[in-house]
Amino acid sequence: MPTVRILFTVLLLGSAAASAAAARPNVLVMLADDQGIGDLSLHGNRNLSTPNLDRLAGEGARFSRFYVQPLCAPTRAEFLTGRWAGRGGVTGVTKGTERLDPEVPTIADAFREAGYATAMFGKWHNGTQAPYHPLCRGFEEFYGYTSGHWADYYSPMLDHNGELTKGEGFLCDDLTDHAIDFIEQNDGTPFFAYVAFNTPHSPMQVPDRWWDRHADQELLDRGTEAKREDVPHTRAALAMVENIDWNVGRLLEALERRGVADDTIVVYFSDNGPNGHRFTGGLRGKKGSVDEGGTRSPLFVRFPGQIDAGVEVAAPAAAIDLAPTLTSLAGVTLPTTPARDGVSLAEPLTGETDAWPERTLVTYHRRKAATREGDFVLDEKGRLYDLAADPGQTRDIASARPEVVSRLTAARDRWAADVGVPVGKGKQADDDRPFTVGHRGLTTTQLPPRDALFSGTVSRNSKSANSTFVVDWDDTEDEISWKVDVVEAGTFEATLLVTCPADAVGSTVELRLGEASVAGVVDVAFDPPLTARARDRAVATEGDMKEFTPLTLGTVDLPAGRGRLTLRATDVPGDAVADLRLLLLRRVEAGG
Image (tube, rainbow, N blue to C red; front, top):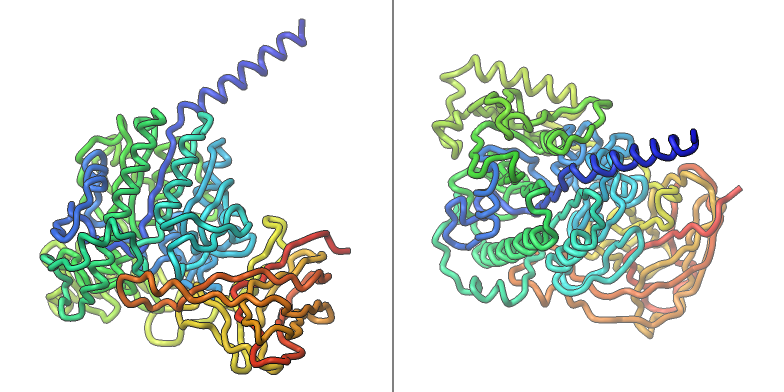
């Protein structure tokens, strides 16, 4: 009889836990890449039509002063953690500066701990190697890329749960397809899905279906600095945003088909201002600027039955508020250690209170900071603006309000000291953290040219380092190296992704870390054409891209510890060694 009572109790507890999980709302977060505040018909832009996003905004809360950071990776880090990006080690967008401190729990960690199924689709941009990879940050499923941008949006090389795969079709559509599969195949467990679209970030590629309407379009609404607007680039961005809108509609329809639309919190925002001088509703600045145009993002939050339709929020809010707000709305515990900078907006959103928080919000990039309190903003040059009267930042009132300038200057300096970032003149510090190898969070470590150091004539094929390959590797004096930290000794299979013309086959390549080394011969002729730039609708800053093939050098025993992992050719019988896209180190067994 006691056994029966124990079993009955266990069943009751299990049933209660299942019921509690089932009662919790799903969460779908959608993030656009480089979509400005003006890239919506809802915000008065007559150059495009965004019916699905406009509808989403009308079905929940719509924020008019929602702030993100001027560039991609810092905003993403703030969304994930509820902390200022600099406090989490994110100070830039490439060469390691984009990596989010792995010691800080993420919003995905919180939802996963609460029993949610967690998945991320799209552009991650907060670290490639474990423990920075999405699979080490609370996500059970990942499909996308970890870099800051991708050079080709048509069937590119992608990362699926830590292993390389090939995408299918136009990338934004492909990411949406995978997110829809996740939603539709869900077994009833509450889910947290993060869909980070790759557009309208360059390269400006978009299918004909979206491009044809804009190819020769006369722009009715122009950028604040219209003379600096690149019209073909704007046309492509408009087409890309309309494609996003279509994909948002597909995701909303998937929720309806699944019967969970009323049980799902849906969020949409962007990571920074527009990636060009185009319509921003009169706001000053674009991507990279700490001004309003560079840091105001759309934010829509829909939660049927909890957040009234048509709510318009004028109070300032920021990306740091999303993690505490969403966990609070879902009844999920977000760890309070280390301390969070964001605040939960759940109570004012659901009408439990009319009071919105008042605090200092700072947008920051490369020692430049804009500081906001209430309607005032102090820009990086010490100019003061009243955003209620002058949202376009056209009239400096610093001389008329010295007491406000003094207060905001002091607030900025306190913020910078607290977060640990410099403001004012000076050089941006380099990120000296090594790149991790052999962490148990992933079987394979990816080391791209983006993270490499070079000597000799070898270099990347583009100054935009995030999606590049090594070129001009043609001499035994050339070296490609990575500052690494092998976190656990082991035996690793070393594979290069390369191209090599037939007349250059035969170079011997050595990979070395201290006394450990492995060498192999470039014995494969594979020389496909460059194809990415031929698909562009406007001039791209990214380098071109092509297909690469794997070349396995063999296995090497790497000791634990820090050092310089170096790749060089010891013999070059032809005119070149190879072009290199990626170094892969796959753990095959633990070391002694």
